[in-house]
Length: 459
Image 1 (tube, rainbow, N blue to C red):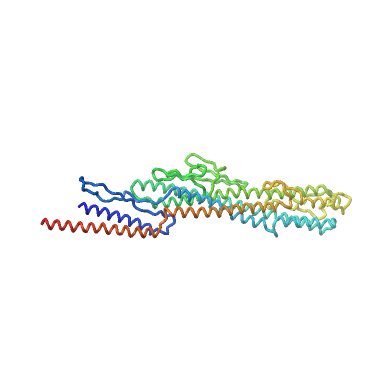
Image 2: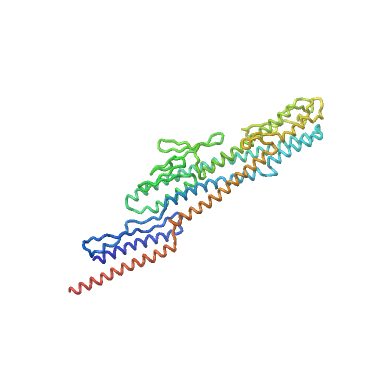
């Protein structure tokens, strides 16, 4: 009977191994699947005596080939890749818009000051004066168009952030639910590997949105928190992330867990949300402020110089531009009702052909303006330097994106080396466990023959 018992335990163990191998082969193309195997343990003799070899083999549990460190590396790489990938389309678009030669601010400035230069040949010429007004209007529209593009980008960033917040909440709730199911499944002795794979896949998706910290618990659950320690998932409970949009276009983020509310105002989130924050705070908002300040200082300088001169009829100069940072139609406009004769080119009310004040207007192009992104820079060079700085930001992000993609690829390969299914290895296992099963069945057959021979001898 010992022969049959041992061989039967071996056959059952081989059957369990073949089942695990078949599951691995079936899921060779399943994303995130972690391969499984069996743990074999020899059963000590149940009978006393020096000649009792043992009582067969047992399968204490299935093995799940996973490495928590490699999983953490995979999620960290996902966060960095998500951050760099999200910012790049915005940076590329800004480079194209701001660097446009034909419709950019630089060409508008050149046209405006070229018109002023042309008017200096004959300061009393109405067509030349009208050309100054026309180019001033075109310049204002270029400022307004660029400001609208920047405003649209900020609105797009805000909308994308709201979408990401919704995804974070959905994934957190799903991870909490899977935590509950895994804990319950382990308590009933059922293999939770499929549930764990699904949970790890959700954590990977979450990590691409925000950088996370993951801590394994004794009951098989995983607690997930943000980089700053704010909780997203604790056991079977999930937090709720909230985004509030303010009238100025800015947004504030909070995480609510149980009765506690955590502010994320100064938290480096990482992932897609971190990429949105970095782009908005370090590139977009400073650029928006620089363009607005540039328009304001241009208007102030031109209007201030015109106020020092006199129109054709000898009256004091009137403003050419109107600046309104909250204007519905744009930040910069040509003053309504201005006509060619109103332009105060003369420094002498009695001399219509005097162009002294006009020369000072022309010199404004070389005067410095103070911009938050650049400091003090000449009006003529301001946009060029803004484009150069934006290009540098874009190049740095592109390089970081390439590095992040390489790190992610390496992390995936490292994870697969431990957890991925290798068909060659599974084929070898299949043959070994098949032979193991057949050998044990042969032992049972031999035991039956011996038992039959024994009965015949006794009969």
